[in-house]
Image (cartoon, rainbow over all chains, first blue to last red):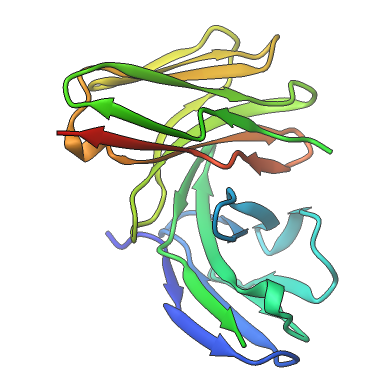
Length: 110
Length: 111
């Protein structure tokens, strides 16, 4: 059974561009969360979606948005990229209390 | 601002020795405490989820305890092995659906 998958694995963008990151949860999991992890820090919570509705939002600007589709996959969108958005973006799907993480997307903003 | 603090930040342990580290979390609106092991170039792997004060969980040589009243959790590793080298993250999950991660404890097992 496939775990959480994310695409792309790596991405290089320039300042001002926008980016879309994708996540497919484990089959049967209806909740997806997004995290940003910069070097030396723990993952920072961005969003949680459950049954296509936003359940929680971290302290991120409106440039960050997300959505969840009927098949429970999710997209994270970041507009007007800044250098500081360079990070590893992790997606996690959850069932009851347990979260399972994907391998992440490494975003580099030049 | 709610913070999760983990200590120590980094730890070197001789193979075969036992070790433990700490996670302090805000106790307000607490729902669950998660521990993860994160090896380089891999996804964080869930170790434990604990919800009740006094919970103790064990998986092989690794165990964890939870004190929700004072807001801390300990992770113990018995008889450290080289494959235990990783960053150990804890995260507190609150009833407003906020999940807060600590910065992790980086564990190095010395042969």
